[in-house]
Image 1 (cartoon, rainbow, N blue to C red):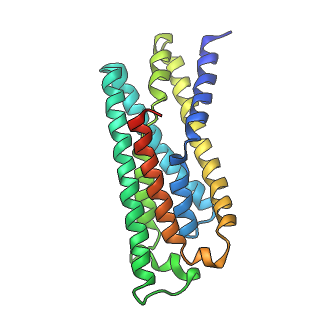
Image 2 (tube, rainbow, N blue to C red; image 1 turned 180 degrees about the vertical axis):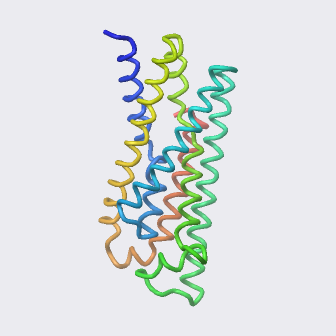
Image 3 (cartoon, rainbow, N blue to C red; image 1 turned 90 degrees about the horizontal axis):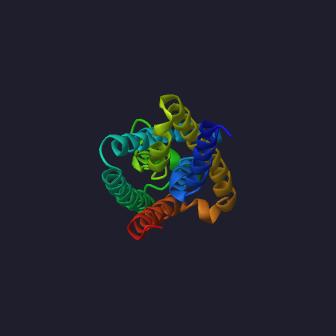
Amino acid sequence: MDPTLILVVSAAVAAVLHTLVPDHEIPLAMIGRAQGWTVKKMAGVTLVAGLIHISVSMGFGALALFASITLAQHVAESAQQVSGFLLMAFGIAYASLSWKRKHGGHSHGSNHAKHNFGSAKNPDVSWGAWIVAIVGIAPCFTLIPVLVVAVPYGAATTFWVMLSYAVATIGMMVILTSVALKAIEYVTRLEKVERHLEMLAGFVIFMVGVWLILETALGL
């Protein structure tokens, strides 16, 4: 069998499997639910996050090829830990501001929460931009060995492997965040839950950050 085809398929499979890790979709889906995003908007936001995610990962892959695999993995682990801490900070800030708004005499009910929680000009842009950036900077460790294996087979093979990995990763992120958004909408449809949706979103994002740090530290 053509080695290029094997590598391309292997890259796609690796991308799909690594995208199943919850830090790729849960933070985005939770903010999307809290801000009342449609599936279409969720997909668009995830597409941007995915492009950043892949670009950062390819940068670490290039570092591995031109400098050192060990160095690239070390820097990538540091970047992932930073992403974890940022998710924790984001979750705390999001939940705390929601608590302050709801208990500071400015609550207008769950139906209006998404219009009052965010920047003055556009309530959901600032939170959406932050979560996109945080999710995006966490690199894919699996791309580094994939690129290292592909390079000896030439530029064309390396290109197709990178393209396969990128398309599979971004495609799965879009699919999973859209599915997660609808699932979260169903789970949180009760009025009592909706009233505390932003605080719940903050807590879940905080826990994803904790999980990401532990995953990196323990090598899970």
